[in-house]
Length: 305
Image (cartoon, rainbow, N blue to C red; front, side):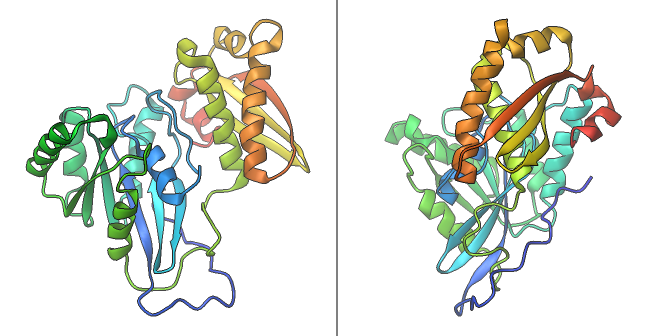
């Protein structure tokens, strides 16, 4: 498996990068629920990566594109690094490791309202020496000035970061400063993606993620991390997708009484998909059981992991 930065698409014809233009890759890493995807979206200026309060929401390496007059940064948003309980968990951690290869900068997300723990120490060891590393102290708006200053001092003692930036994706505080630092650490060169691009992902990937996000939000704690989504067909405005769970009991939960749960999931997902595609879509959702797929390499492969 190799989820490191891929070959980017060529920029649009006719664009001449100004002198001093910089472009490269920055990998965003952290434990689950440290604000990686929300921060990624804030830097891009629109929603590219799904975000949820539920742990381990991110299961894909999503590439988001930040475009500025002086540079372009391809943000590589990664799953939260965690102690794996399944084969899927091991593969998600492998995605994080692979994504660190060949990037020009690394952003380590450390929540302002949480103490540094063993997971953070393991992460610091993993990224150490790979590329210039910036600590983004996320959710900075949750602390007062004195408490935040104390937290920043703790982070400075924790590891040898090139920069430490307190940020809040919710308020936008210092998101621009973080972007400035990343652009400054990119190598000189032309843009890696067209200047109007906001992501390097396919429509199918983004649609599947929006459906899974809708399911996670609607089901709350009723369904564990047994849900995967595949887009089976896109035919004009019609999209057919399958939601995969591990047990028949989970299938009943997703469908709900009289199909009402699945209808709500579809309604929420359709709104996000229509915003993404800029037009009306018909979304046909089906629920299938792939027994113990998180522990079966063949089933995981068919589901894209």
